[in-house]
Image 1 (cartoon, rainbow, N blue to C red):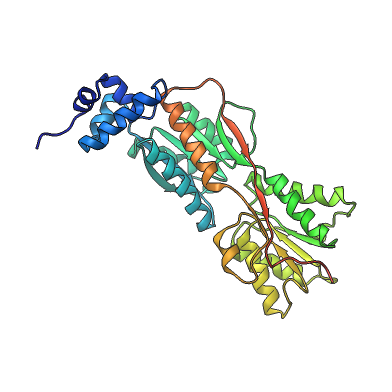
Image 2 (cartoon, helix red, strand yellow):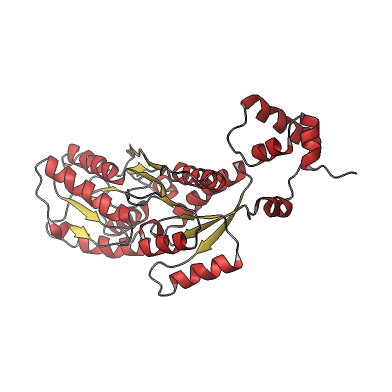
Length: 337
């Protein structure tokens, strides 16, 4: 059987080869009717693009790299889901590359990655989006990149984030509305901008309701379950013990819940517990965790979509968007007794 080529598609659709290429790469400047007609011919002819030929013709690899260093596996899974969805829609492939921000050889690691894997662009997940040394390195190498869940920066980068400060404010205010005034807080990883934003939201909620900030109620975590255990131990040893705990992510909140239960504390009767992210664990444990739902998949999908668009047609204006999060109340929080 004769192989179907881009020329065959163009001939059957009655359009130019360039138009077929634009549709294939999900580029603009193609009318909806023409796009639909070409997509129909793709299906009728069972056309599958040759990635090698496509890459050579356009001097691209059609591969996006995704860098991550995050102790929460569910978070990375959600990031990958969003990135893969964007890549699939745009006929790109995704290369996942784990690395450590605090490692001395991070830049060397990324340089080796670029030498062995020809990438059209890179998506930076937390905490890499806040590491300017890496951003400057990618700029020098002329590798386009997009930031996910990073700080709001005044530069020309592609950035999609959620409003971490407002989310933390709302969940702290929820606890205050239940009568809690002694609310402990567990910070996240010190290299993540979200850590500072969530802490800022917590403090703003306390101040807006006239509750004095108490440093003794704040513990340093790093978003891992084990750091949550250590932080929970310190918090539950306090006398008097706080009536509520707000952890910067659900895994640390789950650790607090487990330790509280081991100490025969009833949740939420004796102590209320809240988290952040709406990770699967928040729904699967009992009592279910009150938390903030963060649109991780959508953030990543938008970031990768804009990155691919920028690769096709470099944009002068930065694409920087802040998506809203939402409070989800479950059984782990209740009015103080």
